[in-house]
Image (tube, rainbow, N blue to C red; front, side):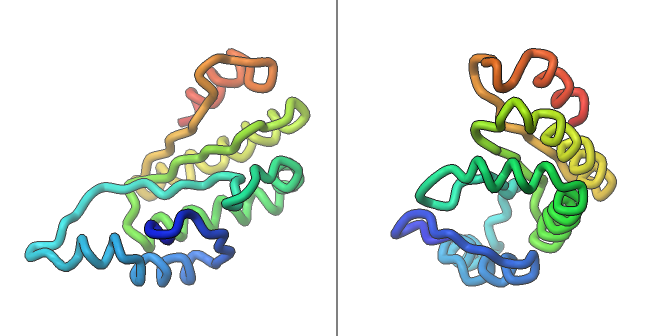
Amino acid sequence: MDYERGQNRVEASPAEAISLLKDDKLHQWMKSFNPPIELPMMGLVNNYDGVEWRIKEMAQLLASPAARQNLVRDIVEFAVESHQAGIVVDFEEVPDASQAHFRAFIGGLAPALHSVGLKLMIALPRAMTPTITNSSASSATRLC
């Protein structure tokens, strides 16, 4: 999270990500005020590594029930420990073959976040395309 030089790819456990947030210049500046500035923020989960959209890797992750479950656990842990208001999921270019797996992921993430009082926002394409159908969008909306 380097706001001066752009995005960086960071692979970190939830605890490591929280440590990075504490060192982040924006968060330090907000905490420097008396009283500190407290803005409700939602963490972003996407398949972008700072250079390219990782579609193949995202599809592989979504295809694995164990990987989905681990991701849900890590996302919820991060959101709770870092005092997020919720999570925004912005997976780009989800292949048609991965739509059911994406819905299963959202179907696990939504109740996990809601059970600890957090929100879920899903970024969907403006115009519905064959990749995300109207029924898929409706299913995702119902899950949140």
